[in-house]
Amino acid sequence: MARVTGHSFAKLLQERLWQPLGCEDDAYVIVDRAGMPMAGGGLSTTLRGLARFGELMRCEGAWSGDQIIPASVVDDVQNGHHSAMLADGYSYRSQWWVTHNELGAVDARGIHGQRLYIAPEAEMVIARFASHPHALSDAGDVITKHKC
Image (cartoon, rainbow, N blue to C red; front, top):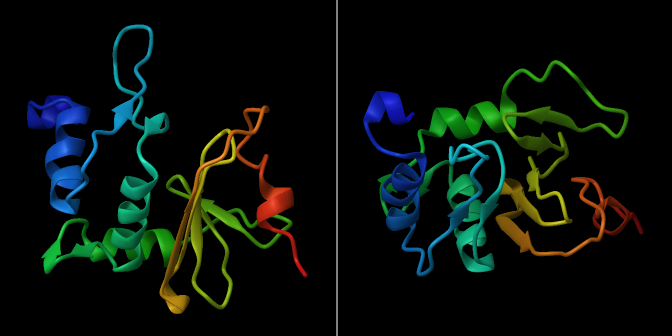
């Protein structure tokens, strides 16, 4: 991204996503040993910033009348080809877990139990912070996927 645009990943994230969403607080991006941002994970944000991003995804990339993320990108995450179906009915696509449930839900998971659950058909976004002692994206599944 930096080579193509001439801007760092952090600057692009701020200008193209965080500012248009009206996020009050900065987010932080983990960098590797060479100082390169890790765009595939390691984003630290406030709960409110995470929820705003979830609402942006729920609204097909539109925010306050502006198309911030192309609707086709959101549609590809929610409805695109998913080659590997998992035993629990989920599939994985572009850093998102796709439920294939009646709510059209997708979720993003942090390695210590953080979760962003987006259910467009229910007009619902749930942002959750957690602090599980084990660094696994599915550490909170025993809580989150509990069926009554």
